[in-house]
Length: 448
Image (cartoon, rainbow, N blue to C red):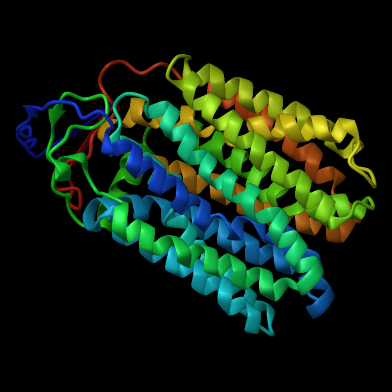
């Protein structure tokens, strides 16, 4: 199968060699991006800790509160491909700064809510749009523009930024909720997101060519190509073309299960599930923060491996091991953190988003220069899976009285995701398709 633009391809941009600087500015851009991801991750630490306090104060069922989390996760994913296209058209700096403001606004407004629809509006819509604009498509955009060498490693480090945010905020949020109530915790999250905005506006650069430099690992300055068509048309066009390929559905299916078994299930329901077995919420939150700590190690290591090992084999191993761990999790819950639970936490942390670097690499392999936008849609599938799991697990808990069935189903699905990953073939030197110059028009031909 191949996609070929019917319009004439643009002439290659003029390039020229330059002398390498000792410290490439790409590393500064990566550092600022990491801090921005940490700042936006504050909200990611709050839902699991706030489920029971909101239930106790307002009397809302856990399924209702989980529905707000599901809306957030859904928009988080569906916004990502459009955000990647918006970054191409309007710049990374503007999109990221606006996203952080939305996260701060949505978190701050929750302190005055009195009805569940307001929770859905704040947690779901505002924070979902904000965090979605800084989702993993942002990581793919930054690494695609600024790095040729070390791309897999930097992808792993930036992906770990979200885990670092969880590590920083989760214990703090849990203590604030316990000692001062959930409203102060929401305001702290809002303040953290706002605090990063000046740094983004000041230091986040768009392209290495803006500094008259090549990307890290390249030898020539390549001016950025002008954006083709509108952001929405480009995102939808990429989906329409990618959806005709088998690799897209294999990647999207596996990543949907990845989202269901991380953000949707463990990220949202681990703390309440541990609380059901008598564990203090602060202890459970500390365990979930440890997941974030080991996630940093696992994701950076996965990025390093992605530069060296077949990404299909990595994904297959990650998903299979995750499934096995989820199948034994129900037997590990207790009133205290036993050694067996600590082993699970370490293992699950190492595996948490280790799937991201090889998935990004496979999107680039199959979809070429369009890989960041296509990965945005693959990530949208990740968040659809997370949203379904967040609501589904809440319903299981309300109907059956515990979460055991949810853990078993998630384990079986993860093993299935391993199979999907191993079904991917190796792509040749030519990418599956590249976005045409006039993406908003009927510029695709399909030959299979």
